[in-house]
Image (cartoon, rainbow, N blue to C red):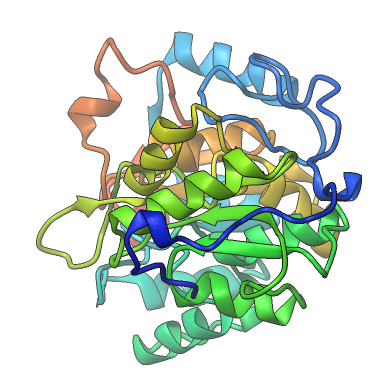
Length: 343
């Protein structure tokens, strides 16, 4: 990672001597980036209102009816082919596995369900997340894991981002590894994109250098892996999330980021294409309303909120909450007990 430690007056130039290539700019909006409109690629300035039409009617119905408590796990399991799971707050909290997860995943696999794991946490690459799953005693293939670090690299590939352009990263090792695997450089060359993710070593000089990159390079992309307010570094408390780092760059540049993680449907579209999945045959399982559940609804999936992470029952049922999943339950291991209760 390029770390700027010199005083701001000695920051290196971020501009190219020639005008930037037009291919380094984001695709033309054509209703993809506007408020209240959205289509393929799923990249929008982060706002609940910026959601695709394919989930709008479903959200309207769910908001009016409210979420139903999951009573018949078998019926939900049988109604879909694929389960997409968030990780933090669903599979684990910090480095601690949530009770009943291995048995639940084994049950779903035994029924022939495809399992995919999607996380907004960009600190690790897919390979590194594979090792974490293994450490926790879970057998998960790297191809089943999709982190926002990977999404950032995949998005740059999808727009044919020039390989001679530099990507300035405010984030941790996961983003750097995924950029390397995709063939993008983050040291040397003119800056064509700033990618911001969760960064425990965040400081003023990174803000300043990222700001200069965006301000001084016409067409420089501002990409956020996510805008989560909080994250789980341990199971004891919540920590300030990647949204705080993104907010700092937004505040200094006055430019909205393109969000590649949830609730943007970029990863949903990518997964659907990769695995040949019909989104109506997917159930998105998560603990956050404004990322996980909205991500599933934006993609036209069934949604299940678990109360083992960020969202409480009180928050879900609050009159101020307009995001309602199809179902809610305490944790994913309820699949086991609810199944037993219906026999």
